[in-house]
Figure 1 (cartoon, rainbow, N blue to C red):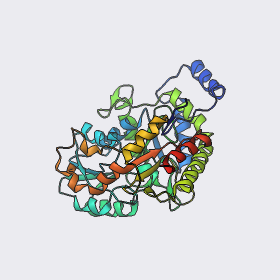
Figure 2: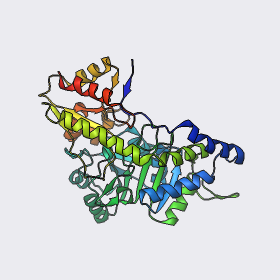
Figure 3: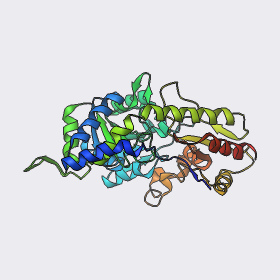
Figure 4: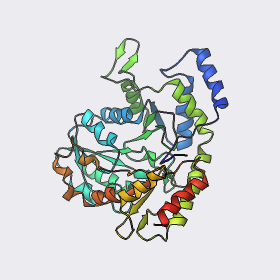
Length: 367
């Protein structure tokens, strides 16, 4: 029986990848800013409409390096409703995460809660564009400017997302992308930091390569975060298909939305403006009017080999390394807590067949 997962990587035809592999074998240049790496940085920057990009071996190392690049210290305000890497990057940099509640419509950081949480020890805001829905970037930037804070965006879900005609990746001081296998655009594993000036990009490039400026000069205590030529080659080939992939996701999302919009007890997130989103996920909320609980529907789908995901559950603030923080108290995070207990992300990926999607819809609507 076919198993259907929340998301599956798009893989271009193997025969189209072979010329890239042959060139890597011929040149014997496997990493350290090879030709494919340089091409991918340039072509991705053009595609995404950003000035400067530094590719990384994965998004988590990119997050950790971004905090290092901006020399973030002390407290950082962030969201409990995210993947654990967001908060883990803070702990790895010995920063103190301060969790605040989320907006009930977008599930992104609530700017009003952010401002209320600022103390003299606050140095930065680490926001997340959840499911590719843009944060309230205008309000967050206003807050950052007023209080002299750095503003960093975890944009792991936001590949190709725009807002008011401009890439959301240009917002804040830095944006961090993930190219993990399950993302809209993937290089098997991979990631990137987006920045606005050449000087900061140079510092980031030093940091991801152990701090080396040249053969004998180390500028900073860096890390090994370099993307390999193999990853970059796959990324170049993926770019040829990315518009097609995003269009397929849009078709699937529209089909879900139309089929589920009248189902009592199923809440859908508002659709983004035309041409601005990427449909990286399709979350629904299971409310009390629905005949089954969220976890009962989750198990029901699994019985049919449909692997939906409770994404994000539990909250990051519920994990042992965070739950002792005063900001992790569930009473301070009522919206995030409720959403985490109701959310279920349905399968969505370019190769999802319509018959499988219709099967998912029938299971949900025929309870």
